[in-house]
Image (cartoon, rainbow, N blue to C red; front, top):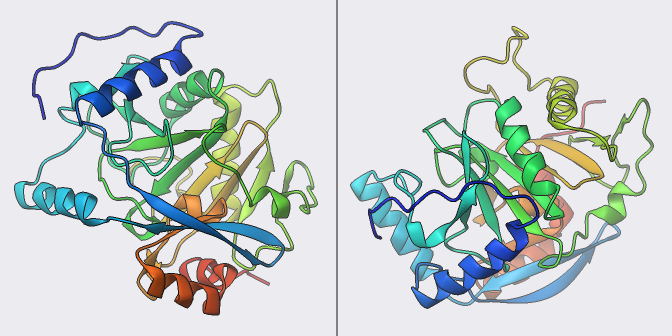
Length: 295
């Protein structure tokens, strides 16, 4: 990794998608971007057609994590200039996801260190909305190691809609909303979903986020939203909906799950894990790593 901080690229409206494409080409040419090859199968369960990807080579990412853990390095401080896309705001930068499974998967990273266990705040949603206004897709946040977070430095993630289907929307369409919030009868684990309106801005997104976590009793009991979270959770959504899922553990039967799993996209290491998952069922896997629905 080059440790020279690249010249900053101030945010320019209507350029994010073209910058993602240009930087992807550069990242591949410099080998800073290291896509993870997969095959995939569709595994239907509970009315949802899950996309299950099988890793062809996990060694690259595993080795990088071992080196990082040994050296106690932070890949975002400093970040690799070859993965830097643009500034998003004074508080956040946009970076390509180094080990991407789908194309143009990018990160919205705090410029200074903040913990992945900290609550999301208004500046996080300002940065997210700025990116979302230009690149539609799936946003997600892995709130803590038990929710699939692999880095301790706060980062939000976004996968463009051109790069990934969202099987979970089949279940979301069955949700009955009361005052804009509901839960899907197809999903057998604790969760809440809120509807996002077209004109919702960062302040509304922050309110939706806090309302979701409060409804699941994973909020800040003081009401101040200071310090760190008490319970791991996943947060994911599009321009139309936002969902929160409290987490119990990172994996079950060795199959790790992050926010993408709750979007209907799972990842297994090999064919043996694929067969285990088929026997168990994707919905049961999500139920095992999530929390029980409160009656």
